[in-house]
Length: 308
Image (cartoon, rainbow, N blue to C red; front, side, top):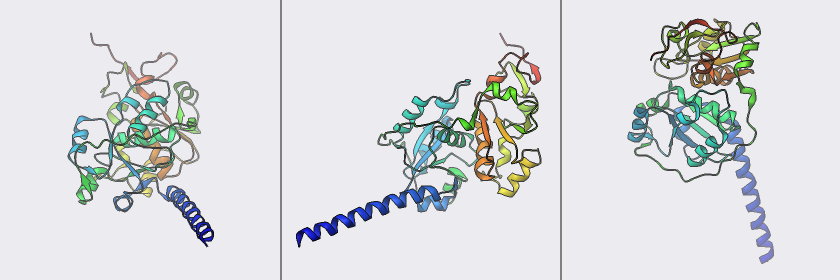
């Protein structure tokens, strides 16, 4: 009798474990790359929530009031330095571990508002390092707070996780020489996500040696992806924005900005909202390109006199 009871209990335990694993896998597969505030409110216990930014003011905003349970990610150390080299795997693993994130966790990223460029920069980083279970909170903290949803203050310290990067996804990254090879390729759309002032060479916020744009690049400011309230524009509106400039699904798309952050916004919208299959980020972007040998890496613009 006791043996039969033990067998029954063991079978129930196994079935529960299998169903739990199945639920977790189904949950990860069904979650959209864009989640709304109501969805997050309903699933706070099923995901790891991360506030992403790099400005002191945003950190203060996080400490004052943030989504309950969320941790803070300062992304500048990972994507703030211009380099032709890929993002640092060891730094990424360390950051994810400190945030209490493990490889199988589903992560929801958000910023002070939906338009915060760093949020989708972190999204691109996670996909590059093979973390597929990641979503973006539409409207960010501003929308969440406006709706008076579950919040808390202070700086939350996560219990350390154990994160290890497997295979990186090099299909979404491109380097300067690959951009150079495709300057006259009609099957490639080169998207400049910085902003019209920088594109025209009227603004030089980062003291580049040259101002202007890469030949053939299209002026598509990352701000064009968002509504006035910081939420993403509709799929129809985004399609109109990009197709009006000739950025169509049949082309390979290369996005760049100053250092890869705004370019990641274009990557996200094109790949995960509009369904483009072949979108890459030139991480070095204008910060690298503008300092290269102009005889080999051309620009449309001018050389800036160095200040003493």
